[in-house]
Amino acid sequence: MDSHKLIISRSYEEAETLGSAIIFKGRSKLFEFKTIELPLFTVPLKANTPFTNCIPEGTYEVTKIYSPTKGKCFMVHDVPGRTAILIHKGNYASGKKVDTEGCILVGSGFADINQDGELDVIESTDTLAKLLTILPDKFKIHLL
Image 1 (cartoon, rainbow, N blue to C red):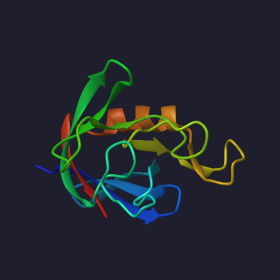
Image 2: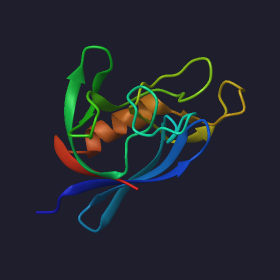
Image 3: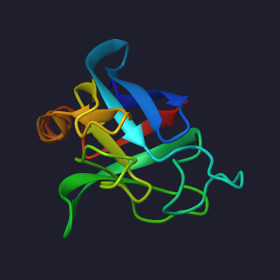
């Protein structure tokens, strides 16, 4: 049986982490989308700090869940030093309005929605809805 996997290749920018994601079922590519997270490092240089940085590179189990605050989304399990890491809708990982405290936000592409000079993800609600239909209840995510 072919299993689903999600691979996200990330670019570490000063203010945020941008990702290009692909869902595979076996060897078949099912869907491509974009992601945005908090930055890799903060000043002073620290990494993997809850509410401050992106998720460390690695492979993690993911399950579909219902969050009281985010609705239907995905939970990333066993992230070292972290809890309650979700994949959910939202647009901003930097600036005055930030939609993540360490989670992965999904969208169809990047644009500077709020004109602050940083990229944001667009069409997040539609992208998450598509992921909820494509991905099974349990799968692996590979963060590069």
